[in-house]
Image (cartoon, rainbow, N blue to C red; front, side):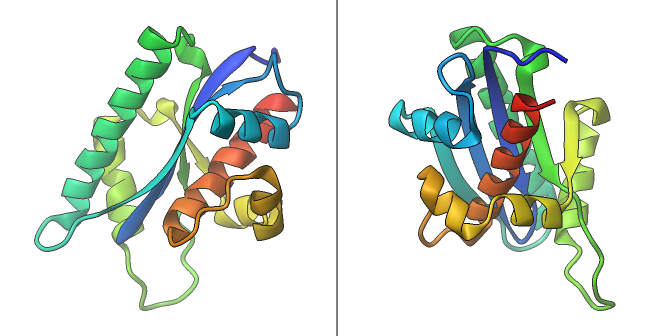
Length: 169
């Protein structure tokens, strides 16, 4: 597999409050995940946020907002920054059922996204894999620790994991 010179990753941690992390990354100027992320932060090509919707159809509205963010991100990465479409990645945390009575909003949001985005455009990642790879210590070391945005931080973990997988196929 070829490591692209430049690529873009948008990562989503769906839930009652969904975390979103986006980065335009330049592998020709960085060889490690740390170098990639630090450079993206320095170049202001890295963002972290959170989306929340309340009330009736909250998950549907949130899925629509996330879809709109994906379309904008993909447009900027491809048209404005010249990153080829095959190197623009959407990563979504896969839901893991761990207890009987649980909030299923992550499932509803993911299915909402799947109704708007072709399934082959979404890469699913396990929460445990992202958390064990992008630990709190590493996020701080890489310069991408976000204060007060726990869900956004989880999205950053998924972004970092995907970037690492792209760098070392």
